[in-house]
Image (cartoon, rainbow, N blue to C red; front, side):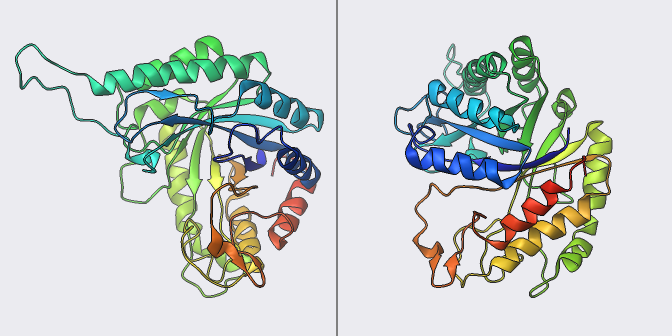
Amino acid sequence: MFVKGISFGFMARNGYYRSPEGRREIENICALGVNWVALIATVMQDTWYSTKMYHDFAFSPSDEELAETVKTFKAHGIKVMLKPMIECHDSIWRGNISFPEKQMMIQGIETDYWGEWFRNYSDCMAHYARFAEDHGIELFCAGCELMGCEPREEHWPGVIERIRSIYHGPVTYNANQYFPGSPFVRKWFSLLDLLGVSFYTGTPRPNPTPDEIAADLRPNVDALAEVARETGIPLFFAECGARSVEKGTEQPWMYSNSGAYDGMAQANYLEGVVKAFTPRPWWHGLMWWKWDEQQKRPHYAQPGGDTGFTIHGKPAAEVMRRWCAEGGDR
């Protein structure tokens, strides 16, 4: 499995995938030449401290529209990673979901918030695992950037086991950005078939070339090689992106800064990442973040062009097209 893909539908509202706009974007993705797409299903919970998540009639795509979308991608020879993603109505990032340990300050009363959240999360994953099994999904993503939840070693094996009892394809998880020196590898990662990582590491150079970006990323290549060795499974970038904005390679993850349009900064970043990681046998490619913009980002509209993460009509799309056209698994 080697991924040359794109993420599609982050925060897309119910009905988007089967709308004229959504269908147009699906066809545009198919024309790009990618071999994978991360198809996102938004699942909501009310707050970062809620213990129950649910299908939201405004935010969550229906299973029917997901099925239609999967069918279209498959008809074009594109494999699908189904990626259910938790979002919070209070607008707090999912990585902050966390709860206190069980306590008994009042005798006889003990609330297991972690247990409640994981029971409901397991039900959520079971629903989408069934969908993935029924529709021939090639890869299932068991979560994304749940940093507050990842350390719960006692709960995750049960979630993975339940997914595998329903879905018989490979299972991954999208861990957050790796920062050398910070806790990252969890024991339960080794239960996966491959580990997804969000990769948005920047370079301090002004206007770097792809070769310079690749050189600056070399320490991260070595560090992630150690992650692959420690987990015993290959990894890929379940998210990897940069905006087409001036100095966009310095902080590729940054969505809120303003600046002039710079399509080459984005294109050079994609090419530099590919150059840095391609020779490594444990690296299995990337899902570019992202194809479509569903958030309200008025500061992205600049005279020279859109400064967001999207690549359609930008130089980065041609970099992706050339890379995909090379064929093979590298």
